Image 1 (cartoon, rainbow over the protein chains, first blue to last red):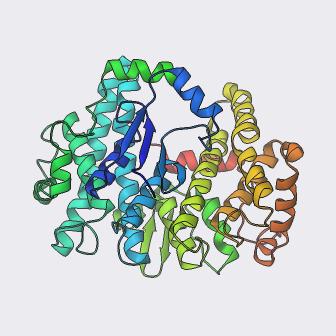
Image 2: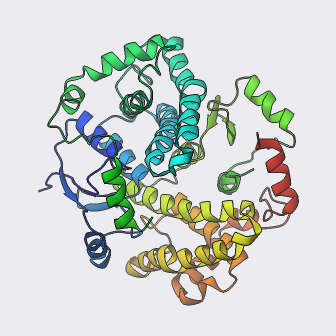
Image 3: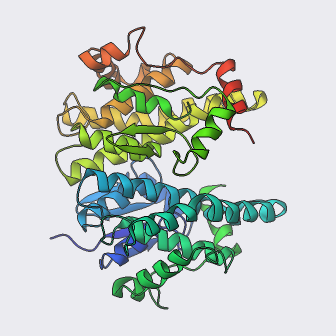
Length: 222
Length: 208
C-alpha cells in the first residue's frame, strides 16, 4: 500500500517549493525529511537513493523520483492537473517553463554577491513585468476564462500563483499593471486546498533568509 | 541555435524545415511580430502552434510520436533520464561561450560529470534489465537524448566510453537504427560542433 509521498530536501524553498505547492493544491498529504548537514546529504548519496547524486528527491508510488520537472510532471498527470490532451499539455508545459525561469531568478537572488543584489533585483522586476506577466495577462484576457488552460485548474495555474507571490515578495506592487492577474491571484488563492496551504502552519516554507543561505552553502559546498 | 540540436534529433521521425537566425534584425522581427512567447528561441511551428521552450517542444514531439513510454511511470523514468542528460548537455552547450582561461577547467568538469555522475547511471540501467532501450523495452526520447549526449561528450573526450561497455553497445545499436543512421550521415539537418564563427554569430544576435 503506497504511503504518503516523502520529500527529501533542505528546510527551505529552493527547487522543492514548487513540489510542495503542487501536492498541496492536489490535496495530497506529504511527509518531509530535511537535510540539515553535509553528512545528511552524504548519507543519501552513499545509500544510493539519489539517481544523479542530487536533490530534490521524492519517494512516491514506489519510485525515488529526482529532477524537479520530472517530479512535477508526474504529480500533475497523476492528479489531473495536466490538461486533457497533448495540445493542452503543450501549453501547460510552455507556461510552466516561463514561470520556472522567473522563479529561478528569484531563487538565486539571496546567493548573489551583495553588491550585485540591487541590479539583479531590478532585472527580476523587469523580466516579470515585461517578459513574463504580460504573457499570462494576455492569455487570460484572450479567452476570458478563470484558468490558463482548458478552462480547468492545472499545474500552470498553481505555478503562476507561486511565481506571483514570490515576485510580490520582491516588489509588493509588481501586479499593478496586470488587473487580470490580480483577479487570478484572488481566485486561485481561494481554492480550498491552496487557501489551506497559504495559511500559517502549513508546509509552505518562508522566504529564503541569510540563515538558510548559510546552511545551503555548507551542505552543498557552494 | 543554442538548444537546437536536441530538437533536430527528432528529425529521425519526420521531415522539417529550418529558418536560420543570422542577424539581430531577424531576431528582433520575430519578437516584434509576436512569434516568441517569451521573446526567446528555439521556436518550432508545429501543428498550428508556435511552440517555445525546448523541453515543452520535445515533450510534445515525444508524446505525439510515441516516444514517451506506455504509461505514467515509464514517462516518469524517461523524464528523469532526459532531465539528467539535459544538465550534462547544458555544460557542453555553454562550453564554447566560456572565457579562454576557464575552458580547461570546464572541459575537466564535463569529463568528470559524464564519467562519474551521468554515464554510470545509464550503464547500470542497461546492465540491470539487459534490454536494448533504456525504458520499457522500446525506443523512446530517453534513448535519443542519451545517444546525443554520448556523441557530444565524445567530441570533447574521445575515449569517454572506455569504462562503459553497455554504453558502447548501446551507441552502436542506436547508430544502426534506420532513422538515426540517416541523421548521422552527411547532408542531414544535424549541425556540426560549434566553432568560433558560430559563437560570434550567437553573440552578435543575442547580446544586448
